[in-house]
Image (cartoon, rainbow, N blue to C red; front, side, top):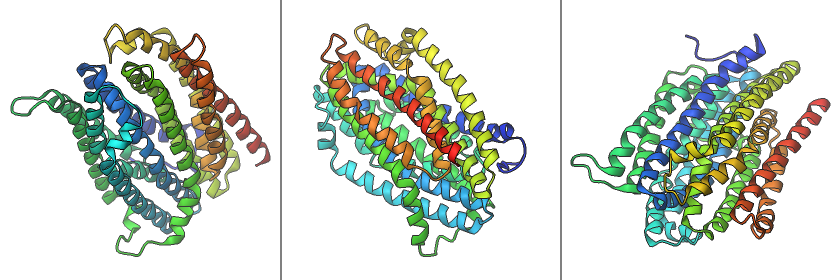
Length: 445
């Protein structure tokens, strides 16, 4: 079976779909990975979910930093392969992996040393919730280097046209996580129950397995990885190019998370149960945005290679096909969240007092799923051109808008629901405006 897909020749829809399906499947597996954690943690209670929700914000923040080498490496490697410069593609990929390791180790050290003040930012109410949150943070973010490397490996393999490797590695990680979660959280035989700490250990253990799987696939690859010289001094030219393309995306992602952390602090004012609702709700909502991100990654590599090869017509066809698929998926997710919120939320938390809050969250956020999916896919298309500033500008401006909008709306009878509406309204605006910007860019291109 041919592992690397030819993105430069053949039917556009077929090439894009063959690349996108394993990526979307990987995203769904990643979503299942997160939801598995949440299902088991939810069985402990809403306090445990609140603890993981607070600590998980820093894991989310780390993804922004990890996106710098991933995006910069993926786009530059795609350009180089499209232009027939495989040695440069190998150089960009090696530099991206080295940056990932460096950033991951640095971020992990900060989280391990300053866990207490970092969790203190959220002003949680229960001492047990605070203790669990600090433990989860020290383990998952302290060893976040594996997650950083996995994201960059995913980007590089996608640039090659081999999205199957990420699918298989992530699937293996999910299997490990599914096995370890209940064993470590609730105990089994001589293994003691460790609750939230056990969930953190299971997560890191699964990420380590994924990293080892990627190293195995890299050893078998002949397009890029065989041409890497790890004993060679890092080339600053490659690193600078990675930083130039990846930095806007990284800043955008980290600011998005930072603003979300401020919103989470506002949510904590309504009690730890509200924090738990936001955590569970966002994981359920990931059924749309993680899939859209998977398709955006395929669009990114498709456009990068064809842009490097000068295939402008093929790029336009690829984007049109991608948006058609994402449009259908966004509609499906909207209907799912708005029509079945109760049964979905009960899978994670069954406490009667928390359920109405969860239903409100899913119904309100369901309104924005189509627009959010369009924004994510269009951002991937912009990035394929190396134009990471437009999606960053749109995202930063309208995500910042959530803060004053939430402050205004939560003082109305909407109360907590006003915060959810601030997120939905800003997502709709981002999707519409970024799509309009990209269509204008295509007309000029």
